[in-house]
Amino acid sequence: MKVVVSRSGGVAGIRLTWEVQVDEQPDPQEWRAFLTSLPWDEVGERPSAPDRFLYRIRCAPHEVVLAEPEVQGPWRELVDRVKSAGSRDR
Image 1 (cartoon, rainbow, N blue to C red):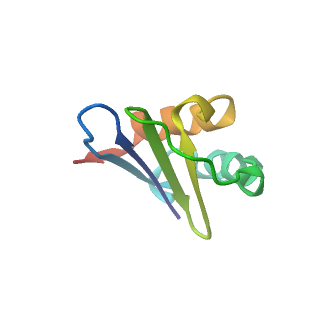
Image 2 (cartoon, rainbow, N blue to C red; image 1 turned 120 degrees about the vertical axis):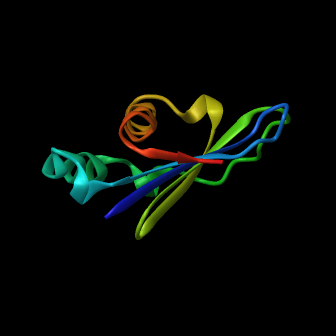
């Protein structure tokens, strides 16, 4: 299972992407339980704001797009976990 977090937008418009292979983590069961607990179906479409970051989070079969202010609570925890445990691409 792979988790991909992409951040785009901002003033410079640069896209950064981090990804984690859950099965390669030291605690894959914790990752799976955490991913299952996320409110994937509660995220609706929202318009983007100029010069703000957008986060696209993918973990098949789920995908959400969050504006920067919405990345809080469990979503912030997920983004931080993926950034610290994963690899980064530009």
